[in-house]
Image 1 (cartoon, protein in one colour):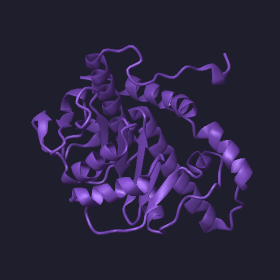
Image 2: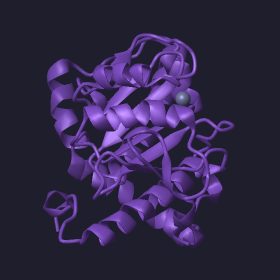
Image 3: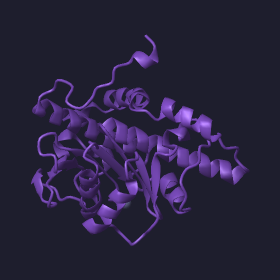
Length: 255
Ligand SMILES: [Zn+2]
């Protein structure tokens, strides 16, 4: 079978609402375990959200203060459009609500959004620049990410979240200056894969620029490569080995 023949699952894909909710929560718990494994945690910072398939203005998110590496399906909390926790008994990170509620509202097509204070993403964000098409992998973001060129402290106001949603536009990622990365996807897998590969693209550009003057991929080739590595199908295939690894290593995430 050629890689291009792979059929990737779309939203619902024949599942009931209840099955889809469980599916998203399992993906979300696995996503946190991957964030923990990659070392993307820093204190209480960082959140990944999955839109509820029934209540479309509600999202599932990590409980405030819980280590990414410990999160199970049963630990996830459901937050409504006002920021109230309506399922689960842990508080929500105020910044998670301020940012993610507005990103989900601005982008009805988005199922999931991921953000953390990962080291290379936040280092790169301090430069106030978009990523260049420096490597094949970085081309996934070519003309498909934005810069939120402002910093006003910890995001606790939904107005600030609205401005971040506006800066994101219809792209797959936004670099929050002096803060870190935020990625979105049409599934949890997508938001998480874009985050992981974007973090590594930030690392690659920081390393290349520290070592010398990188040669950029020209615009035509960057566009072509974008279609190859920046698509949902490519994203789905890239994510599966990580999913297989984390679910085999840490099956308690399903609890
Ligand atoms: Zn943050």
